[in-house]
Image 1 (tube, one colour):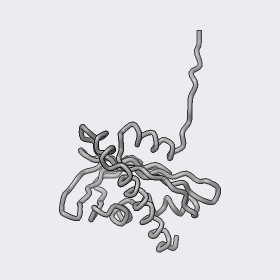
Image 2: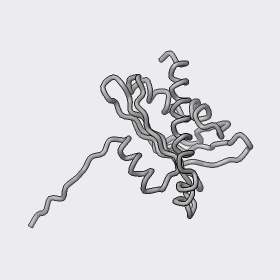
Image 3: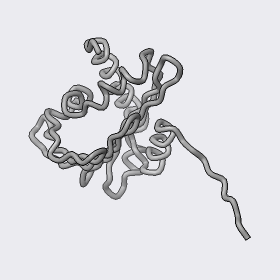
Image 4: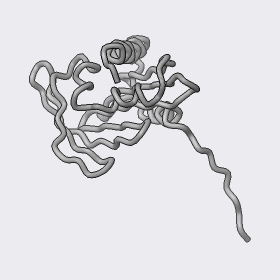
Length: 158
């Protein structure tokens, strides 16, 4: 007897929303950006050049190994802290994790606009408590990152 199980295909933003919930990520936000997907993703996915502008605590982000959509990178914070990240980067989807941090971005086209989402969280035990402690501040951090992306998009002539 053959059974057919139901399947659900989720777009990248919905997948990121599920990941944020499952990981108890304290920072998650999504917004609609009035620019086409290709333009938004070209800037957002340029991690080496753009991530330090989007994440206030980051000074540099440098690729150390690239194998297709799998990337290894080193982040250096504004106070000199360092972390190595494993990254999966494909059109509309980016998930990054270091030993202690989980981060991500996702985008989908909605007509001539783009739905864009970000997440940030801890991989340490007790991550759910950090979400509860940050509350609305985590939402504000996410919307702040998207706001910085909007400003970067207006400064690029792509």
